[in-house]
Length: 126
Image (cartoon, rainbow, N blue to C red; front, side, top):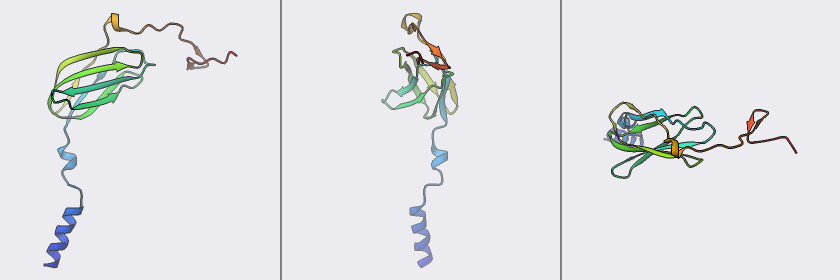
């Protein structure tokens, strides 16, 4: 009887063995086509308001992992104010590619970008 209690207590204190296997296997991946020096956030929202997000790398590539199956609105927003979205993205148990960028009338206009010594926007000129 003591052994049974010890085994039961051990099971209650250990983390669930299947937790990793129970995570959603879907993903939303792609390339946010915007200027590489602006940070872009990608957010996928389901019809219940649950959101999943990722930041795009400087190459524009992003990956939102562990997305449950369903239909999502995928929204892109960059630091410069570019915003665009893709509706009705269906996620199953695999990765879905969503690649795109803002329309021409939504693009940021960069004026006077300065690169001196390999660092954008900074100058050694006094």
